[in-house]
Every structure is written in structure tokens, then in C-alpha cells.
Amino acid sequence: MTPPLRIVTNTPWLDGHASAGRAVEPVRVDRMPAWRAALACLAVWRHDAALLNIDARSLLLLCAAKKLLPFARCRLLSVDLILNHPGRGLRARLAFRVRRWLLKEVDRFAVYARDTAELRRVYALPAERVRYVPFKVNTHDEVLRTPVSDEGFFLSCGRSNRDIATLCAAFRGLPYRCVALATWGQAADHGTQVDGIEWPPNVERVDHDGATASWNDWISRAHAVVIPVQPGILAPSGISTYPVAMAMGKCVIITDSPATHGVLDERTAVLVPPGDPEALRAAVVRVAEDAELRASVAAAGRRYALSLGGEERLRADLLRELDDLLAARPVRAAAAPAVAPALPE
View (cartoon, rainbow, N blue to C red):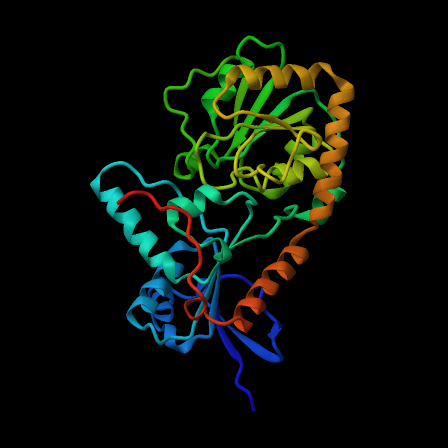
């Protein structure tokens, strides 16, 4: 009898899955105490593969184990790993170099950004190890059942790498109300800085409770949604916010960034350059005053969002990546790929 494939994961996506006619036995590290999960990752020789979603700690442990045990057959699939530019200072640079060295053991990165050139350059990743997978509409069915209205306010929502300084500068003096919605106590941990920012009276800072229902409710009542993203980031920030807004038929104004490159255009969203308050200000005025533009962009954005589907579509795409990886010849046995130029050492 053929033994099942043992696959380390932190998601329920593998439940009931089979690959190439073999049953899958998930090893759920998210259900283990931290010490036991660490040991499970280090025991890399016991596993056929790993599929890890936004779990840098487990992924790096598996990479370290593969460095120590190069004979291990475990294939590594990383999903939506958040990677940043190297920080300042010697310690941050050393940590970055160690992380980049370890990540060479990852066989495939599934990312929600189509344009990965800068990510691949910074982390010296071969193009064939990085696969674009479209994201989904979070809570898809609930979003489609949510009643939609227009209470006249612009909504800027989300906590990851948001450019609040540009948002406030853009709205200062405008005759429109903007609600800035986020779990503000966690924003700094996700790259959003608010210290020292002077909030204009028409930008209301609202602390979100973290509940999906209230998140969807805020979006459903907005006039339009504004997603200002910080310049120079590698992650596709905003990718979980704008599909929900679009699916509800909201016109989206968003910074042109990894979340939009090659995915959105001027038909599906109002794109603005990063770190440019005047451009964002002009976009807000256009959307507020031009009902035809607002409706056209909202309709095209909704068609795009509905084409993404929900959790099941995303799960199917990621499991196809895993099946393909399990069936593929190891990357090290193939011809050496062309690698984008790395950062200077």
C-alpha cells in the first residue's frame, strides 16, 4: 500500500486532498505548541513537502533544516510570504542576508503580485520559482449578500503599509469627509506609521474592532474607497481590501504599487503615483464630482472582482501549484536558471 504524502502546513486547504493518486496527511503546525511545531519543521526528512501561508518562522526553520540535511526530499511551497527591503543598521543587514540565504531552499513562492521583478532582484530569486496566483474576494458570499448604500464619505481602510501622511495631506481643505479605518493599535507592526501626523478635521480616525461583519459594513456604506500605499514596498499591500470594495460596486482609488502592477488599470481603478498628495487630491475630487467616471470605474472593478471568486478558487489554484511542485524534478537537477541581479554585498 502506498503511504500518504506527509505535508507540513498551517492551513486547512489540504484536508481531503490527494496528489498524483496519493492521499495527503497534513502535519498541522498551527495546531501545535510553538516548541513542537519547531521540532516538526526541523524534522524535515520526515516530510514530502510543506505548504505554508504567511508563516515566515516555520518556513525559515524548514529552510535551515534543508541546509543541514541536503538529502531531504521535502519540497517547500511558500504562499504570500511578506518580504521587505533590508533594514538599516548592521544587525538588520545581517538578518536580511541570512534570510535571503535560507530562502534559497524554497522551491516555489506563490505570490499575489504579478510584477515581482523588484522582489526577485532584492532576494535573488529565479523567475521560475515565483508564481503569480490571483487573490480572492475575502468572505466572498457574505460580501455579495451585504446591502450596499452610499452615505457620502470616502473610506480609507486597512493597516498594512498605508501612507497616512499622503492621505491627510490630500484631504486637507477638501469639502469631503474621509474615514480612516484600521486596527490602529496594530498598524505600526504592519508598516503603517501615524506618529507626528497632523490629522485634518475632515479625516476621521476610527478604530476597527477586527470583525469581518463591521469591516464589510463600513465598506458597503462608503461613497468610494481610498487605499494610499507607501512608496517602495515589495508586498502587494491592499490586495485583501480592494477586491471586497470592488465586489460591492465601490469605485477604488489606489496607489500604483505591487498590488496593482499588471493587475489593475485605469478602467478598473483610479491609480495614483506613490507619495504624491496632489495627485491623490485630484483623484479624490474627480471621483467625488464625476458621477459617470465613478460609476464606470466601479462597474469595471466589480466585474474584475467577481472574476476572482472566493476561497475555493484560491485553494484550488494553490493546490495545483503544490501538485505541480510534487511532480516536478527538483530545481537543483535542472539547468541553472537566470537570476535577477542581487543587491550588492
